[in-house]
Amino acid sequence: MNRLRANDWLFWGSVFAGYLLQLMPLPQALLPLKPWWLALILVYWTLEAPEHVSLGRAFVLGLVGDLLVGDLLGEQALRLCIFCFILMRFRARLRFFPMWQQALAVLALLVNDRIVLLAERAVAGLGGAPPSYWLAPLVGALAWPWVFLLLDDARARLRARES
Amino acid sequence: MALTRNDTTPLFSSDTANTLRLIVYLALAIGLMVSDHRNGWLARVRYAASAAIEPMYRLAALPSQLARDAGDAVADRTRLNARNAELERELLLAQARLNRLQTVREQNERLQQLLDAQRGLDVGVQLARIIDVDTDPFRHRVVVNAGMRQGVSAGEAVLDAHGVMGQVVEVLPDTSTVMLITDAAHALPVRSERTGMRAIARGTGALDALELQNIPISADIKPGDRLVTSGLGGHFPAGFPVGSVRRIRNDPSGMFAVATVAPSAALDRSGEVLILHDLPDPVGPPAPVSIEGPPAAAAQQ
Image (cartoon, rainbow over all chains, first blue to last red; front, top):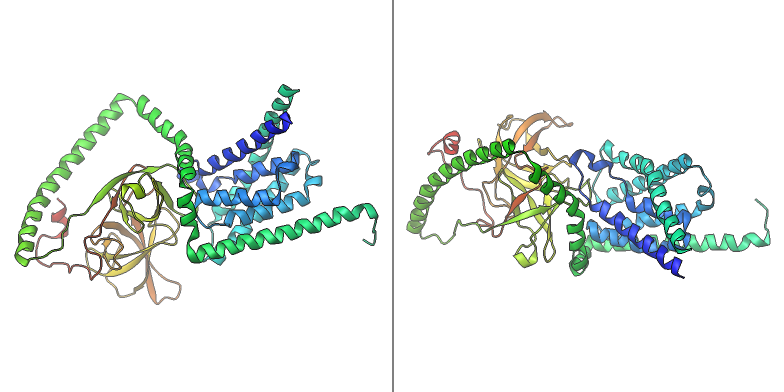
């Protein structure tokens, strides 16, 4: 019971950190490299503690992200739903991949998300994207092992303290 | 494939349920997007949720704020001195220009009184500071720390010391969002200072370039021409610098020329901006360029 609560705290804390990182300013040159932190954090929770993530929750988290960014209500919600759906489908396999294969899978997921976003933009009439548009998934895949290690370590510490 | 074991059935059905759920959520998201696109709900929802959103912005901007403060605190003395001297020089220049403008203004007021004109030229401005958050790297928006309570409303023009930056597109109680002129969805009517030629400057999505499209090939425009707002359309008051022409090329059809313009405002830097409160000259044609009077170069001294 108690452990569940601590885990909940960690979940919401990491989601909050994901939103903050999303809003955090970067130098102009690095802006297109910014990975989609919220998605990376949800990858961790889907793989390791799937009771925290459901499609409905992904939808709501995406909506909150839309509120913060203020582009178009439902944009991130749609992307996050697709993202989490594919992730849940392949969860059983992904879990036992070695780290580098997981990173590749994350890369594929993020690239897929970029394509979804491109389609959304085309529908909204925003037009094409510069080449740097495709860099963010790469950075996301590179960041994935660190996100994983950080969150896993935090969770292990929580568990160790409580038992 | 033809295996139909009993114990896989629940798994299969849960997958179907998941797919169904996905479809429902996707439909919901698309419905939301469409209705938001049509009715602009997001602005209203965001306004209602501003109590949560604004602290989030402040929090996200905190690290860079701290870094800047720390940089100020440890900045070495010679650099500060140099900066101070530079600013003083600039102030002197600006002061001299202001003094000259003062006489022009007095003259103008006298003439206006003579003409019994009601229209004031006073521009209500408000200083605001850019909050260092970026919401989407592919849209050029900035968040400033003045909102509804400070009297900002959507559509107002935003300037910095060098020129037009953009316009307010969304207002929350204490912050507002500004769309920069380089946003791919932004366009503003401009006028060439030298020839008076009118054009529309569109954002390109790159922070250092605007584009004038569909200029007749024969038009008198060349690199170095300064562009100012023309005031047409009523969103921006006339006469504020927008940028200068950097390059001219033919468009793919060969029928028109396209000019690339370097914006004069420092769009990539954060700091203080000015929000223009009321438009002195809301609609109407731009003032004709006077042929008499000092040439543009002399007017700048």
